[in-house]
Image (tube, rainbow, N blue to C red; front, side, top):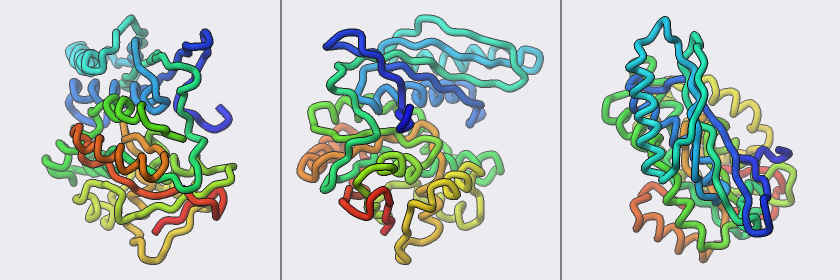
Length: 304
């Protein structure tokens, strides 16, 4: 809890620990089945970020029975169940309450060897940083609410948010990954900040190498950004130094709060190149080396 880890880990015996996490939120898309898919993928992600295997989950449901037809809930749960089946995770129950606002998510249990637990601390100078999904889902979701997002862009965003981080987590398992987290509500720089805060290392981010949905630049320049982006920026900007060559719109994208974002992990340069090749070969095409870990300035991030 001290370093805002992605999930809780409880050691059962010398060779086995359980990973526990939960997450739920309000709808970010109109289609209930798709919402279920995205919410489930997002909830499972924290287990993958710690290098674990998700094994079972329970539904968390808040539903306005007097305002919505029960068929909507049925579709949400079907979307979540189908995503769990894809992840080879067993649904073992859940809990529901009547609420004025619809919410859905999962509590998830995973397993891992205690010596293999990945945390957001442990990156080493000389490491390269890999990000596995493009940024911009928060901006797109905001634009969608204002009818400013095109169908193709929304479809790409949904595909990204509903994609599991399972394969990326499995591919990094044979490598000596020093630190890992997933990029969600605090934005890319927010989660990167957690990795260096209070440590003897810093980071350099290659802004031109960070994957993002190209169509969102115009939306950012129009001011079509979520409120969470401004909060992330205000909180983390004191530890960030931006080179003049990095445009302001890109800085905003780096703070965009993500839903079911990709994994961000740190490992040695030679291994990073090999792992990146494996990720691309397995269909994770947006994965990219987005920066490096440096000795100084300690506890700070330089964006170039």
